[in-house]
Length: 199
Image (cartoon, rainbow, N blue to C red; front, top):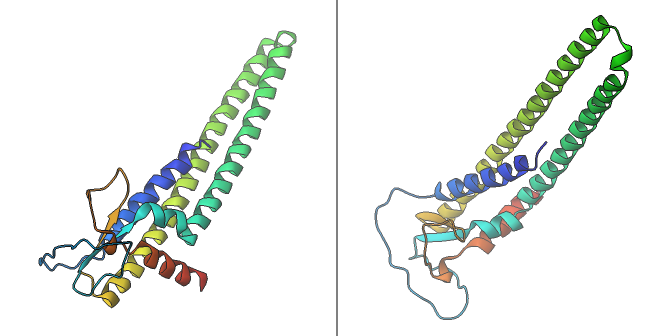
């Protein structure tokens, strides 16, 4: 199993979270100006209807996502070790055949080569199926992650009276500047982790 499988999970999870953060928007077209505040992050006033969450921070601090990451790193390593063991066993079998090939009859060589070709095909199919199964499981977990974040943010936005929750990610965001007073990341992470710890 290649490491890119887990990288794919990370990218999918990030994309899922970005979509989830946008899911809390209301169809109100009213716009509000953001006012710069002095000092560090302050509480968002009820008049502010748009807030944002830093998805990078959320991914590193949300316990559910951290647990998923550990889970799939373990599964990926196990799958990789399994494939490596099967591949090495096949290579040993091929090497043994190559050493004894000259002592075998033409019929024996032909049947052995056919058997090894079938085994190689089976090994490739097994690898593809194992990779596909892991990707399907990751996709299902991404769906759960999306639902958890979206459901929480819908309730959070409603409770706070926000019309829209945007997401910010360094180098991958349409937001070039936002006043820090609109950043509700810490509060969202705290709420998500509290909700996750109850389960």
